[in-house]
Image 1 (cartoon, rainbow, N blue to C red):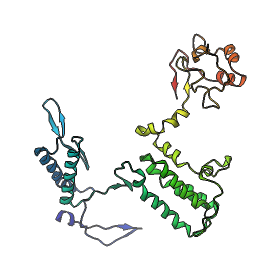
Image 2 (cartoon, rainbow, N blue to C red):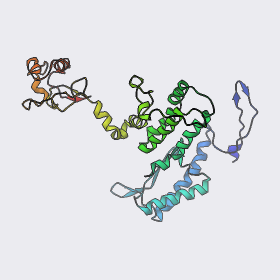
Image 3 (cartoon, rainbow, N blue to C red):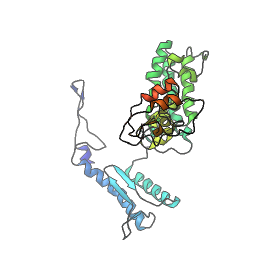
Image 4 (cartoon, rainbow, N blue to C red):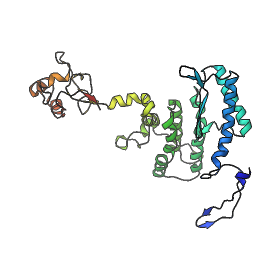
Amino acid sequence: MRCVCSVTYTVGINGDVSESFTPSRSLRQGDSLSPYLFLLCAEELSCLFREAKIKNELKGAPIGRRKFTITHLLFADDCIIFGDASVEGACSVRNILKEYELVSGATNPKKYLGLPMMVGRKKRWAFSKFADRFRKCIAGWSFRYLSMGGKEVFIKAVLQSLPVYIMQCFALPKTFCHQLEGILNKFWWANNKTSKGIHWSTWSVLYLPKAYGGMGFRDLCLFNKALLAKQRSICSAKDVFDNGLLWRIGNGAKVNIWNEPWVPGPGNGRLLVHSMDINWTTVDQLLNEEFDTWKKEVIYRLFDDEQARCILNIPLAGCGSSDMLV
């Protein structure tokens, strides 16, 4: 502790320097001695893992032909633990962490940046505290009189921004999203703190664009999918991507004329026809032999004038290149 308490700090606030004070805990950034103090604590954790391996309480992961096993790896302040996926293995790791918690005085925060570290099957229960914080944020403004314009700005700029970080990390249950939307809807129609007001329309109307009679609020379920449409979470928003994908025509061999999205315009890129000619199946039948121009006569014979013009305006890659979804 002498290494920690042997320094004094002064803090500059608005150009004024505060009185010096002595720290009683924590490590100092930039101090060459602080990393060694951290290593002393981390070494105790390594000793606990090695002891568990000797007692055969933790098996670790085998490496190489000689079956050399690794129980843990430390990278800066991160630790990767290797063990068998069993109840006994999980209990061993839990006991090690509990013992290290007692020795070091640290505790498992169970939350990181306001979010639970682990979310089980009961997702709604895991995010219940966020719903309470959501209500408290509204309660602080319920005592003030806000016009409908003020409420619109408050909902769009503040309330709808609160769950953004959570939605980037988790696929929230629909019931939880509807619960938040219900809170927003109640706040929108309320007259004051004591009066609920008359709900003239549901949230399904309010999240429509203003041009369609809504207020332009967010559909939280769809917004959650949009934020998850990246990296590993892209599968949960696959239906959103499928509706927006369009074939870029190369040689046309992969694209079905009648069922695939390949024509820009209404109908999600699919042709709106009353009857299909089964003799024409793929787009390559509508191209010439060099795949660089369209067969105008065939296109005008199969489709109406508007659809034919849309097809003829589609640029071609030429040179027999492959079709691609974009």
